[in-house]
Image (tube, rainbow over all chains, first blue to last red; front, side, top):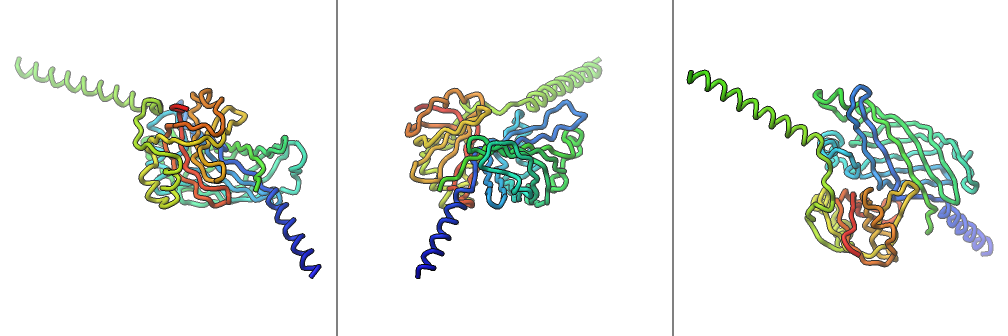
Length: 186
Length: 151
């Protein structure tokens, strides 16, 4: 009986520790830039309502974003982005599910800047592709800021750019992630 | 003589159409997103009503509200301001994880800086959709480019 109680205590306290180990935000930022190198036209947008959850125990990392939430400077560009390119009515969300492969090198209890390697699956426009990128975790006063920058090939996600504007939209898009995460209190 | 003037008139009309078309294309190309203060709200409702519609039927609510301008009244749960000055006003009950999250238009962040929790406010913004609770963080309706109407 005592053993069972002890085991129960251990399991419970382990669960409590796991609950403490999650960091999250619902107002992370993702910047997107597909400006063609030869074109003077800026094709860029920002989304300020990105959900990001990081499990510091396992290094599991997850992002979720509503495609309609990307704000462009030009209204027409935003309409084309939603209607023709990412088809946000059909595919409302973009998602990334991955893991920090060198999570052991990050000390979440100690302030510092930690370079990380992230690999996982990115879903945009209903297409899922494996990606790998380098990023940074900055631990400061109990908060973790996750930043990363990577390049995706637009055609990989079955997004077709009409011939007419092919020289105005780059073949690749640079995606910049900037999320300040708080401890998840449960 | 008559034939010649007819050609001239035709040319003139073609020219006017071309100029007007060009002007329209230029205006359309440079069109900025309309300021939220000038937009007419398609729906006026409370934060709880909006959340209920989405949690009852996400698909129907998305069709009804997404891309529409909404005026939402609710109680401030918190104002989430980041290191770059971007602000999100969260409307909802402090007892519930679910809320209506209003990303404030970057030109309007000074109006929400002094907002206190538990204040009842009305906010206007464009609905971008719903994040159903998949991660144990509560479900949220997201509004974008929001402006504060009154507190």
